[in-house]
Amino acid sequence: MPEGGPPPAAPVLEADEAHPTIEVRVVITPPTDDVDLETKLATLPPRPGVYLLRDANDKVLYVGKAKSLRSRVRSYFRGGDERAQVTFLVGRVARFETLVTANEKEALILENNLIKQYKPRYNIRLKDDKSYVSVKIDEHHEWPRLLVTRKIMRDGSRYLGPFSSAWSVRETLDTIRKIFPIRNCSDTVFRNRARPCIEYQIKRCPGPCCLPVDRVEYTRNLAESVDLLEGKNQQLVRALTTRMSAASEGLRFEEAARASVTSCAPSRRPSNASKRSLIGAATRTSSASIARAASSRSRSCSCAPESSPATRPTPSTTSSSATTRSWPPC
Image (spheres, rainbow, N blue to C red):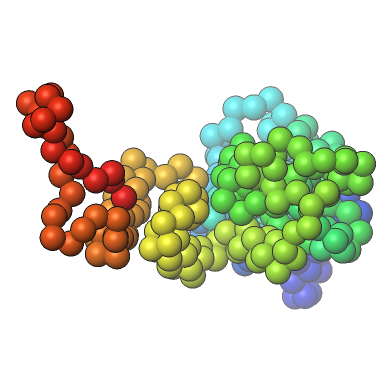
């Protein structure tokens, strides 16, 4: 680059059908050519991010991620990296750029997208068409569903992610389906169903393929599922806690149990203490509701005369003459 010229342009993530643009919060710190190498290395931040090594023709040779950009980039020029290809790589590097991200997960995702965009010669992995998982929501369908996919297409659907852990995504969706019943079958199976499947029997799907379903409630379940995946869990937990209390007051204990499990859903693996506290809260509410219902029922009971309270026969009253008359329980 000519001396005194403009700084190099920031790398742009060009979108295509297979790898669209991913919005990542980055801070780009391109070095200038009129500063020596030691000064460049000293100005690197000790933060997570991605670095790009370029040759004299401004072509990207290598893209890497780091927990600490300062330590990682220094290891290339001070002999800390003993990989065989590093010797050939460093000899061709003319300059480098760093992109600081908010955390390591964003650096992981940004590295994947930059490698697929530039296809550097010295990068061996992540050059294929495989990517991190995302959650697809086909909002144009009459009954949308949550689908795990690795391909993001420009088909008008809504995509959440990408997520670095496929196991965590599938585990979270499995928990969501237990609490917010939405369909899980493919479009082909959905169109050809003649009767509800096993998902309907275990109350994980309302059965919109064959049965009349309240669209408002289905849309609410889908919206709450999306809020949970987007991390908007505080308001959702408060709403579910209120719903759990209302269900316990109405003696709908299965519904209250589902709501109590949902309150643990924002964390990937809820602790035993949080489970015990939620179960204890539901039990206390349920016990109070049962006590009030039993008290109300005993006051309104008219099956026994008011003058003689209902008694039960004791083991000693075995003879017919000594048998005490007892009223059946209400």
